[in-house]
Length: 237
Image (tube, rainbow, N blue to C red; front, side):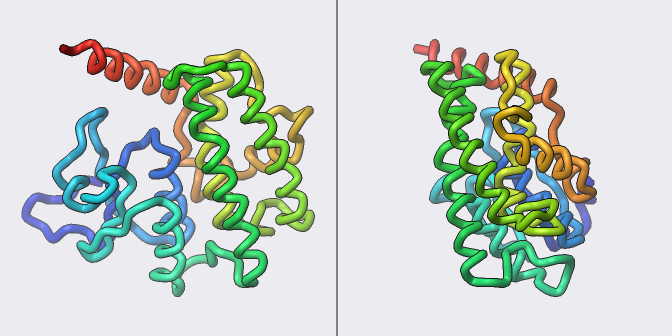
């Protein structure tokens, strides 16, 4: 929703881009909590003054603005949303300290293994696509096993509802599907990772996710536009 120029800014705003999995995490967390927010769309390859002022250290999205105060980095924001809006909606992080540590471990694992390999598959980074595909497959194989342990036989990593690790890994699903369209090869392979494939379908259908999960074809088009912009910048003297 757009704000009226003469009205006070909404209490909660998200600065980011629709195609970013890290931005999507913030939106899903807020929707899960039932917290209304304004989404401030960043332009492709042009960072806004608000983004730069709100995150002067890393100068990147997402940024959550709560009462005008910025919170940066997607995982930090998920923790913040869970604590700041503890009164609203279901908890995001597991209550048990050990379960919480395990979910954080696998979230860090996903973020360490998946982004660069996915960018290579999409042609955003030079590299061996076969090797990148195997890296993604190996990581998803481990995460398929982690799902069995974390879910305890239920529908999501968090049990009966979407939680922290669901949000972190689920934010990549749109780009998994985009990579499948680009390469013609399965990423979430029902044969190799049957539990994750079924989980991804449930995650995408969740009411907190369905409206913010980007369409794969649109992501492919976005990736092509971004690559063209990067090549144009690189060719400038």
